[in-house]
Amino acid sequence: MLGVAFWMLRPEPIPDLLGDLPVRRNPAEWDQVSRTMTEQLRRNLPPGSREESVVETLSSQGFKAVGSAEDKDRRFLFERQDFPCVERFIVQLTFDDAHRLQDVLGHYRLVCL
Figure 1: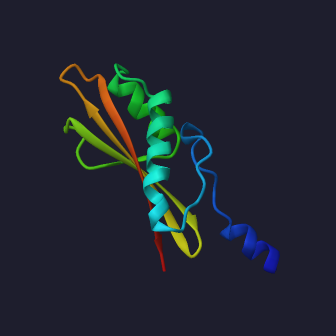
Figure 2: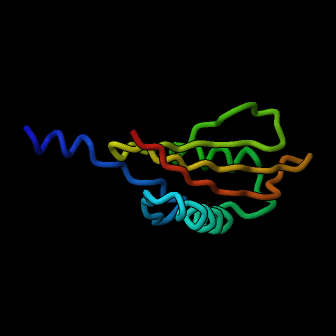
């Protein structure tokens, strides 16, 4: 029974799009994780990518859109339970008027009980 409880509490894997980002409980390390996340995202979502393709890629990896789809700057969120914490992987996208990706930024945060 205890084994089942531990199995249910184990964190799900992060999206393949992000590579192998380690959990960082120390807030002083979050900026480094965010920089690594941004580098990984820029490799996988290059400038000039079509908005539709970028959104589909993020959605297929478990990211949820946050805010309006009409904004030039869009955000997507992936949350991972890692009891007693929740990891938040935030992707910030900037598109041009032709709906092509201009820039992508990654932000990592950890919220604990």
